[in-house]
Amino acid sequence: MKAITVVPGDPGQVRVGEVPDPAEDEGALLVEGRLLGICGTDVDIVQQGYGSLPPGRDRLVVGHESLGVVVDAPVAGGFAVGDLVAGIVRRPDPVPCEPCSHGEWDFCRNGRYTERGIKERDGYGSQYWRIEPDYAIRLDPGVGDHGVLLEPTSVLAKAWEQTDRIFARASWRPRTALVTGAGPIGLLAALLGVQRGLDVHVLDINDKGPKSQLVGDLGATFHTGDVKDTGISPDVVIECTGHGPLVFELVDIVTPNSVICLTGMSAGSSPVPLGTDELNEKMVLDNTVMFGTVNAARRHYEQAATALSSADGGWLDGLITRRVPMDEYPDALHKTEDDIKVVVDLRG
Image (cartoon, rainbow, N blue to C red; front, side):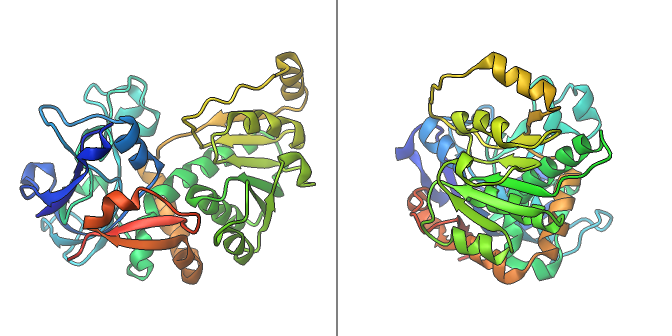
């Protein structure tokens, strides 16, 4: 079968070629790959050396945003041939730590987890892949190709779940949400915010490409420029850029008792003068919570599947702006200003 393999940190070593069929010990479910999503993590793996190879291997099958169809399943496994499925990315560590032993591998405490297509375990960038039934998510057939958005949506499902839990500390509930960044993660964050009935605003550095239209089609409001010029005071912020100076500017514009959830990371270095005493005073007096979140547990994938099933299919179509065949994967790592989500067609 064909697969996309890489050597982390060596862009010249991206290959699409023949590899052995997946071994049965990789999982009882045999899945024919349909689509593979590309995100910034994949770019970091190829260009920056993020991630790590499987033990004893010199190449990694890349890809963690998966979608496929079951072609072989055990009788008692809970899946059937023809099921549309996506794979969970992270696996618990072998110790395991307390969170991993409770299915909360997204809160692993010792860092010995593995991740499909990222850390010490082959990914889903192949024509066929195997997976353990406990780590496969069955999707509503009506979701179709939009199921390739499940993994990034699961990250936002977790972000919103944790945010909701923090708001449970008091009797009031948020009304206005700000999402910073209008890439795939930001747009999915906005979708889940709208589904919660919030007045959602999205801020990006420019309005190039389809993102402003996608925000408007959600019934949300699109902004560009400085966060202090938006004219809003959000109760909740989902920060999706990873731009350090922006993170601290958010503290100045949020309402009392607000929650700021950080989902983005940046490889850059942006020093900024910071009045730490003033920042500390404002966060204390306003009961502000700022927290980071990464990855997702099984329940977040299930929440994401529900969110995608409830979303407008035409709007989800707008997120997938480019489809490329496997052989064009190296070029697909370079997004254009019109791209939101680029996906690889693993068929044919």
